[in-house]
Length: 256
Image (cartoon, rainbow, N blue to C red; front, side):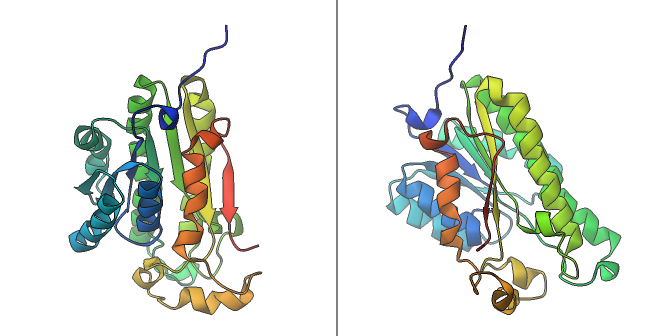
C-alpha cells in the first residue's frame, strides 16, 4: 500500500519556516519573499538585533508572525536549541532554511589558519547538521516538511586562491542534502539545495574583500554578480507544493 504524506504548505494552516541567518543578505531576502507567500517565520541572528528587527517589521507588515532567535551557530549546543524555540514561538514548524554561513578570510590557501578552518566548518557544516537533525525529528512527527540548504557554486569549483575551506564546507553541505534526502524521503521530509554564485551581500566584507562581487563580475558569464532577490525564488519553490516530488536536488543560480 502506498503511503502519502500531506505537504504542510498545502494545508489550511499557514506554513512556518525557520531561517538561519535571517537578518541580512540572502537570508533577509528569503524572509521577505516567504512572508509575501504566507509563511510565518523564525529568524536567527548572531549579534545585529537591529537588523533582525528591521526585517521582522517588514515581514509582519506582510502579514507574517515573526519570532527572532539570537544564536551564534558556532556554538553547537545553542544550534541544537533553535528548532525547539521556533516551535514554541510559532506553535509549529513546516520548513527550515539552513542559510547562515561564513566564508573565512579570502586569500591563498596556505595563509589560512587551522583555527579559521575549524570555525568555517563549525558554522557551515556542523551547525546545519545539528539543526537538520532536530528539524527532521520535528517535521516527521507532523507527517513531513521541507528543508532547503543554502550552499554555493564554490562547492563545484573548489575556489582556488579564494577560500578553499569554504568550498569544502559547502561540498559537505551538498552531501548532507543528498544523504538525508534519501534517508527521510519515505517519512515525508524533502531536503534540497540552492547554490548561489557570487552575490552582493556582506559576507564578502566579513572575509576582508568587500568589493569581491564587483571584482569577479567581468569573469562571470552574465558579466555581473547576483542580487539576493535573484536567489530566493528557488527557495520559495522548494518549500512549496510545486516541489512536492523534488528531493535531493541542487538548483544552481550562478549566472551561467
